[in-house]
Image (cartoon, rainbow, N blue to C red; front, side, top):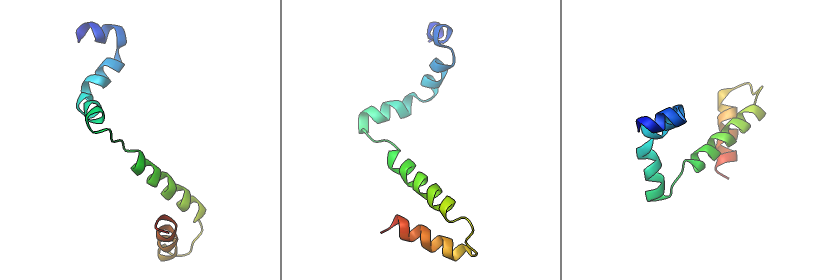
Length: 68
């Protein structure tokens, strides 16, 4: 691993520190893509909801858009 660190620097350190998670992807073939997609939709809805006068109105719009 020392020679890899010399050649690849921080990329080798990143692979070394996340090796378990990387191996789990190849074992299970799952990613966090669904969660990232939901987070992106929530951020978009919150940007569109800017200016609502109450938290409850914003929460209702968020729930209505996410769980149609």
